[in-house]
Image 1 (cartoon, rainbow, N blue to C red):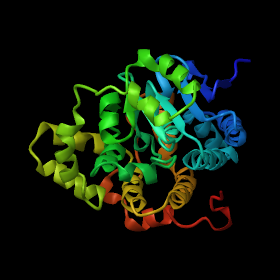
Image 2 (image 1 turned 90 degrees about the vertical axis):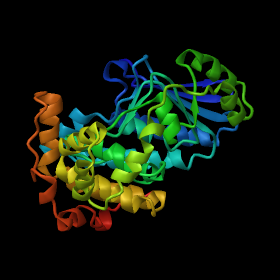
Image 3 (image 1 turned 90 degrees about the horizontal axis):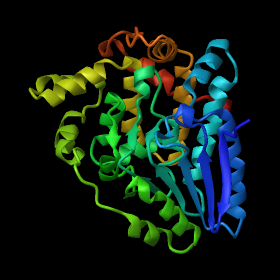
Length: 343
């Protein structure tokens, strides 16, 4: 069988290749379980100076978690339905605290689980092929994998905008937003990897390969994003968008209204509380929320409409943002007791 992850040592680099190009390298439980012990070993290996992670093929770094498997586990009541997230978050924690430079080459689609194995590393290299998004509220889930910590720390209200609309950032805008630390042409990545394998000052190597991106759109939108997405509730943000006469605001309003109302409310709570919480608290918050969300109908409805039947018309419960109550969201984030996430 073709391995789902390929591990190599090249000179001073430990190289991880996510190897499911036919599925845009979507992250499986097997992949999570294989990556974690290798990182633990490489952390102790004095011959390894840096870690490089990339995706096979030219289309995707990693398009997210294996949503269909999660759907089927949840439907059948299998322990993997929440067990996958628990192990994935522990891997995210290992990456965040990895003692050596960890460089993610986010060349292609980078969403969901792919964000979790990239953004918490010390360096992220975007390219013109990068397409970054956290679209989970469109399938009745939440922006997890440490997004509760990382996204609120982007400029202004960029995090709230991304999670409520599912907006996608091209490579240059991913760099402008702070998602990526460096930007360069895809064609130069092999040379970059060769230079990293030689060892030495990783930041200096990356800086030497960095190219200034052109044709950015995010800087022009930043003022509107910060002004219109600062509300403390999704209803308040929608009111601000609807009161704005611009075509851009109308498009954002339509995008928010297409998402699961309960997912959107959960995502906004993450952005507001995560800004002031440490990384471990954010992951625990996500474990609480995903455990409750997997027991609600919206995830299964979202997967049915967008992935299984592809009707593109999910029927959410509750159906409107106005119908979501603070009590419902409080219950989703309530502690798990002895099932709290541990590190």
